[in-house]
Length: 200
Image (cartoon, rainbow, N blue to C red; front, side, top):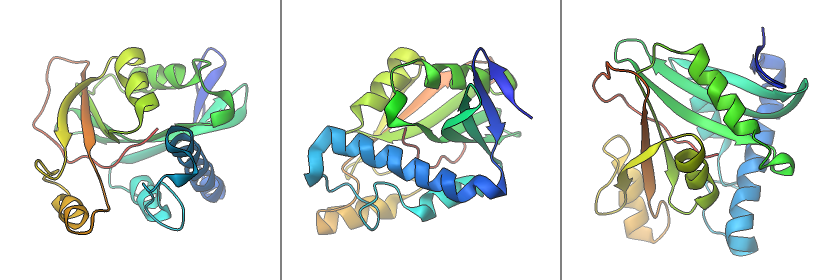
């Protein structure tokens, strides 16, 4: 079943499309990092990829996860994964990507509006993204109405994944910093829920 907003639609991810979804996600993230840093980018998770297969699969297979393909006139142009905890009235944007070949056409905005319309029970949406992803920060803050509420770094590690910052501090690698965003869309926000990585 497709959920449509104008010529942009969301379709639940199928098992047959899982591998291509992962590949398309990695391509989009790698393009973003290369555009930001050039070929010398060192923010890799594995084998020259900005985001690892393990990270993507963990998001897709999460307990409350819902994975969608973003379609433009029926053609697959991106994807997203959200997680909603029915007990807390909070939702998390785990992954969000649009093909780098069609950026800046309003596709991401239309897809996100559809997500909000599909899940009116969510009071607060949250996500995290690396400090260096300036395109993402612009998109979430200026286009979607999110607010930066926290900055995770070696002096203030993410309490859900503190080992990432410990390892990075010791080796000089790992995360340099991640912003946490929130968007309040309802009047009954529940207690904080666990969040997972998100990069557009």
